[in-house]
Length: 101
View 1 (tube, rainbow, N blue to C red):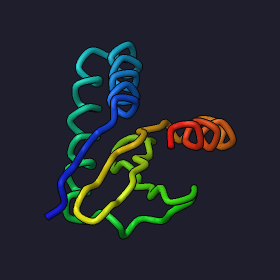
View 2: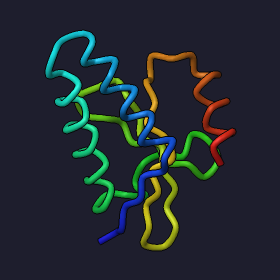
View 3: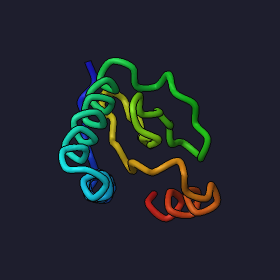
View 4: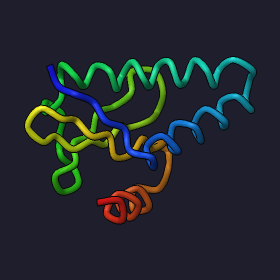
């Protein structure tokens, strides 16, 4: 089983998503975090099967929200680099990811 790490910037992405959904309706922010952390936990088993659209970063799609989890895989460690809203301009997503390496 793989070990999981979440970078500070990915944690900030998760908190920003929480805040956005919590403003939409109370309680949805917590549901967002539960769902995304479940998707991240699944990487301990399924890391490496996802496509690599940008360099060496894999992209796993969230099951319940329009977010993508971008991660690196090095031997037995999965490092979540970013958790980004897929509704953003694809060019801005690439720009953010290239700057986080």
